[in-house]
Amino acid sequence: VTVTEPGPGPRVVVPFDATRPKTRLAPVLDTDERDAFARAMLRDVLAAVDTLDDATVDVVSTAPLDRDGGPGSDLAPRSAPESRATVTVDDRSLDAVVDDAIAETVGTGTAQGPLVVVMADLALVTPTALSRLLAPDADVVLAPGRGVGTNALVVRTPGFRTDFHGTSYLDHRRAARDVGTVEAVDSFRLATDVDEPADLVEAFVHGGPATTAWLTERFELAVADEEGRVTLVRQ
Amino acid sequence: VTVTEPGPGPRVVVPFDATRPKTRLAPVLDTDERDAFARAMLRDVLAAVDTLDDATVDVVSTAPLDRDGGPGSDLAPRSAPESRATVTVDDRSLDAVVDDAIAETVGTGTAQGPLVVVMADLALVTPTALSRLLAPDADVVLAPGRGVGTNALVVRTPGFRTDFHGTSYLDHRRAARDVGTVEAVDSFRLATDVDEPADLVEAFVHGGPATTAWLTERFELAVADEEGRVTLVRQ
Image (cartoon, rainbow over all chains, first blue to last red; front, side):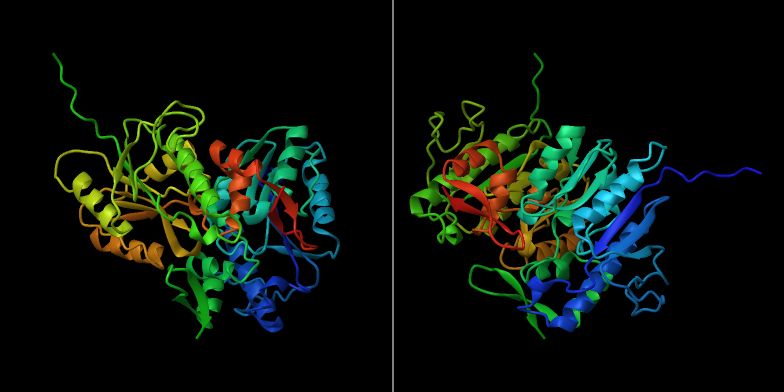
């Protein structure tokens, strides 16, 4: 009998704030809408992550999620009955969650895949964008986000620690250089997290199927002014 | 004697508003600063464009530019004495300028390179990002910008016409499908045009050398609030 050892596929962690998600969208979405919209984006992120070969996928949520597999459940993408993600409830800080995942995943010395972190509000993420994130063979690969954030990263070295506050892209780049090699991925889809009302336009135009379905039921595109700026307006 | 015919290199057009550039930055930059900052971004764009093999580069400006080659001239990147760009003064609309360039470049039936349009405020553009723009072999390649704009494009078919107002990325994608094949390039660097005060953070962190030199003489990064949002503040 041949026993197949666990392959060197990536471990993907998707942190999710199930408690008070997307508070900065309060000017345009009420509390229930923010909850539902955050879950729609999570479903799109998981649908993209699920395409990665040999990946194990963990959603680390601040509160339990519904995963009955139906079309309205928190985790089921429209195109699949259920994500293969596991859900862990952990309400510690993002830094603590990710640093623990680094230690568990790349800190044991045995051959294993990298740790990948993908934020749950990357509504524009696609399998191709994730492939580009995983392509560089650097110790740390960063996907910069708007506003000097870090929207996704790949860690292949146990010495790296995270600090997601403020100018995290610059801080992570410095920290990565201290412990190994670092590369950045130039991706609009990975750079666009959906935090503020202005970001909803990007989600509407470029987002995954769950995100765009949710938005198109409520909003439509409008040209806002003479300069041609584009915004979303309620139907 | 062997006469080398003009190669099939791309013709790159960089439209530039030399008259009233970057008016939406008025909340943070005065008129003289907007003029100088727009020219710093233009120099970075030209430095990137100048790396393309066999390219001819035309700046189409609404007013004459200083091109004496010194470090303070409008066109000279810091790293080179002078851009090889030619400057044409043309104060018509962006659509008219680009449509004429399409007709001149890919409309004559002879073998020639594509027409490439790169906006002058793509302060984050790099040679690598431009190579990715030129890589797909589609009739039209689009680089979507924030807010459903079009920040760069490649045209290989004479049937395509532009419409840069409003939701131009969607409009250009539709128009391209009517006349041929279309692809989009997923690039944060190409998606980030510098139009509004919030965009200055991206230019400060990820911009080319002329842009970042200009900004770092006047601004510094600051974490704006408890949520960790990052902004620029005057020194």
